[in-house]
Amino acid sequence: MKLVGGKKMHEVSLFLNASDLFIMGSDKEGWSTSLSEAIACGIPSCVTNFSSAKDIILEGINGSVINGHNINLFAEKMIKAIRIRRPVHNENVRNFSVDNLKEDLLKVWLLL
Image 1 (cartoon, rainbow, N blue to C red):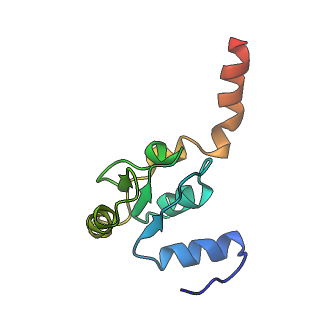
Image 2 (cartoon, rainbow, N blue to C red):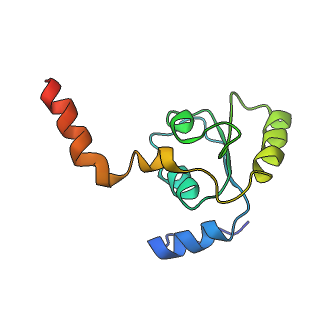
């Protein structure tokens, strides 16, 4: 693995589109921008169950979410995820697009 530092948006998409699988084994995340980007690029993903994982990943459709840190289960789910046909389903991620932010915020504010 090589850490390449910060990249511009078009460079990130080039890296992601050259990938066969996105993996993330975090204990804790907020909303995972990097996972959203991978799914938006159509890359199957295998991640641990952090805060936004189950909103972004549709089990077996665009990847897998692993509860806990069982290495064998993670490896098994990575193999299954890499076999998912690309590009993976990403409509659920589009629901969280910044394009929808204004409308989503107004819905919440109107409830207050």
